[in-house]
Image 1 (tube, rainbow over the protein chains, first blue to last red):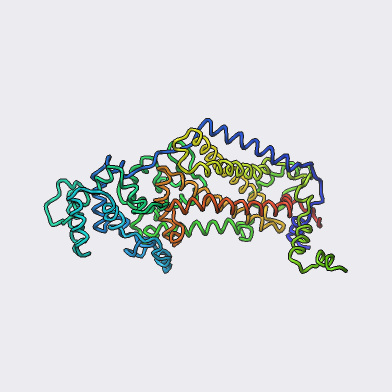
Image 2: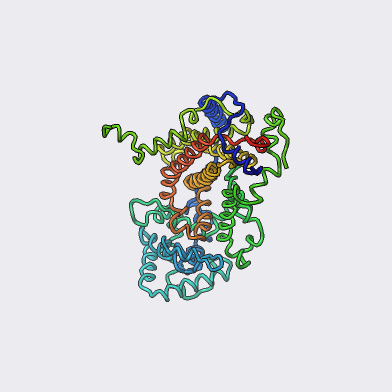
Length: 324
Length: 212
């Protein structure tokens, strides 16, 4: 019999050598006791993280200019959400891996009509001053082209003065300034969080619209930067405060620190980083799962003899040398 | 032979097949052993059972959090303590599990027809990552807002976002509480039963020259 077949037969056969006493129930009981003591001790000493959730009220009150500008971008279709693509809209095809357009193929399953769902509908669902109600009526009565022309002109004018909408040049902006100010005031009052979530309904458990709107502005992003949560600074593994985060995501987070994935302008890898990294991690996970049948990989434990440390007593007692 | 007796021994019966297979592969002395091979004598062997113990702690604290609701711990000191138990249970669970995983890698523990045991272990690791990730999404605090915003891009990029929506807290909560713990629990039971069935892998090079 070849040595490898002989070894395999030995490894598979029921053990007939020396044994030692083993109480599996007692082991389990002690393990639960020890781990529970550790968990309670850590909890009592360190507690757990809980940084308060951000709100639209907080955003509009602390940085009303950014909230106002973001509202205009939502109307003009220049925000990140407006141009996102699937699963929210058809504004773009999304990311791809060569000929694989998985994002596009999966389709728009979670439709978000950005101007209406994030601005017009919530503002129309609450009591607003007369000039805002008039502006809303004007907007709704206009054609889509007219709406886009007003919002785009205003968005461009605001961008020209680096976001300070109070000093923007006069122009034909239609009802857009009144609508943006109306939504800013509603957000300041604290009403917008609920309006975006429920959309006029009683029940809702889907925060997609709120998250998309938040992500289009600077408020959430700035808070994440301050908390070291950005993806390009290992933020995926970090936690708020001085607590451990999802350290087990290190292999996934690693690729977001490496060029060309760090450069969004670099095509195709950087500009499609989210898609490529998902596949890279999928491949590495597959390699781990199938390590036992991958030549080279499966031999590493034999070539790097850490097992001599694990079973050192047995090797010594049985006088078993390391075999090449 | 009476029909009653015939039914008890009929080899084509699903029930009889399952019982016979179970008794053949996993008799009670394998399931609840009182001895182990002499080589099972290293600190590395305790990390599997420590992982399961931490999983048990997580389930208990998670059940309490489930009954009280996801926002309870923001306003209650008792709630924050139970949340801390859940948090540290998860952290310890992963420490134990990763040490267990690497230990098994360096033992080449897949040897001797134990590939399925290795695969179920990897499946448990992946299910654990999914369970923890969905847990982070339902913290209902700033961290969960940011994770939802960032994570959606990764899932959307490969089409998964079409049916798995990190920004939909209702969906994520059901997956975290009702689905993934059951999946992880089932994989863990399968993994442990395979370990009991096949036994702990012998040391590398332990086969005597010339055969067993």
